[in-house]
Amino acid sequence: MVRASNFVSVDKNSLVKAVSAFLPQVATIPLFEEEPFSSESEVLVSEGQRVKEGDVLSKSRGLFVHSSLPGIVQKIEQRQYPNGKQGLCAIIKLDGSFSYLGKALPKQEWLSFESSTLEFLFRENGVVNTFSKPVSLFSEIKKIRSPKSSCVVVRLFDNDPSRITESFLSKNYLSQVIEGTQIIAKSFGVKKILVVSSSSEKIDLKPFLMEQNDFELFSLEVDSKKYPSGTMHDISEGARKIFPKDSALAKLGKKDLFIDSLTALNAYNSVALGKPVVSTTVHVTGDCLNSAALLNLRIGTSLSDIVEMCGGFKRKLFKIIINGKMSGKAVSSLDIPVSRCVKSIEFLPKTELSAPRTQNCIRCGNCRKICPLLLWPGNLYRIANLESMDALDENDRISVKTAVLCSECSLCNSVCPSRLPLSQTISILKDVMNENED
Image 1: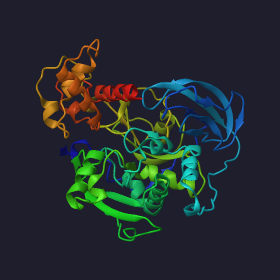
Image 2 (image 1 turned 180 degrees about the vertical axis):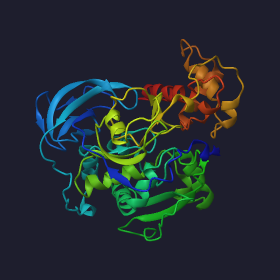
Image 3 (image 1 turned 120 degrees about the horizontal axis):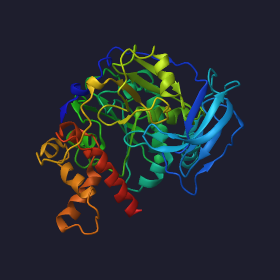
C-alpha cells in the first residue's frame, strides 16, 4: 500500500455540493458500452425518430439503454466511448418536454416484489454495477449468485483517491443508498449487508445498523488514506480481521456481490421510483479548467460541453483522465460523451504527466515489490506479449493463472521506470482467460 494523498486532486475537499449542469442541446449516447455487441444486441430506434426522455434506445443481454433527452434521433454512428473503445452511439437533438426531470415520482412498495421482478427492473432501467469494471447488475447477479452467496457489500467511499463522487453520494443520499443496497440484496437472495465506510469520513451509520425489513446490516471501517483500500481483496481482508472466523462475513469472496454507492443509488431510483438511468453525478476537475465542480449531468453530454460549463480552459490541455488517475483511462478527444460509468473527468496540462514513451523492462522488481497481492506484473506483461501462448512452460502456465487475482489498482504502473502499461496488459490478459473459460 501507499499513501493515497499522493494521488488526491487539489480540489477534493473544497467541493461539498453538486449542481445541475445545463442541458446539452445534443446528447451522444453510447448504446453498447457495458456489454459487447452480440447477436442478442439490438438498436431499437432509427434516424429521424422522435423519442421521449427514458425511451429505450438499445438492449443487450443484460442491459437497456435509454434516451436522456426528449428529441429527434439525428444519427446512429460509431463514436469513441469513455473507455477509449469505439462503438455505436445515438445522437439526439433536444426537442420537447421531459418525462422525469423536475417531476415528483411516487415511491413503490418494493418489499412485495419477487426477486425476478427486481432483476428485470435492473435490466430494464439500465443499472450498471460500477464497483470495479462496469458490468450490468442484472448479468452479474445471474452469474455469481449461488447457494454459497451470503452477503452484499456496499462501499461508501471512492476506491480511486483522486475522485469524490462515491463519497459525495454516500454523504448526501445515505438513506437511498442503504435502501438501494437492500433492494439489491433481496434480488440477490441474501439478507446480510456489509456497509464499508472510510474511517476518515464522518458518516453516521448508527440509524441503519439494525435488523431492517428482514435485512441484517453490519459495519466495517477501512483506512482509505492508504491505497488501495477499497477492492474486493482489501475489504475481504479487513472483514476477516474483525468478524468471527466461522461467520459468513469472514469468508467474503467472489460468491458475494460487491457494489458501490452509485450502483445502490441507481438501483433505488430504478425500483423504488421507477426511473431509468438517464443522468449521473461526475467530479470534474483538473489544472486546465477555470473551475472544478460536481455536476449532475445528462448521459451523453460531451466533454466539450462540460468544459464550457466550467468556464473553459486557463491552460493548454494535454490529456483527459476519465475515472481517476490510478484506475482510469486517458483519452484525448473532447467529443467523447459521458456514460453511466463515468465518475470523474480530469483535464490535465503536460506538466502534470510523465512522458508516455515506453522502454524495455529492466527487471528492477519495483512492480513486484509494490503489488499488494504479491503478483509479478512484469512477468505477466512478458507472457502477454509472447507471439503465442500455446508453448508456455509449466512455470509460465502457473504464473498466468495469477492474473485473475489482479485488482487493477495500477500501483505497478506508477513505479515502473520503463513506463510499461502493466495494469492495462494484465486486464486484457484476464479478459482473454475469462473468454476461454466461457
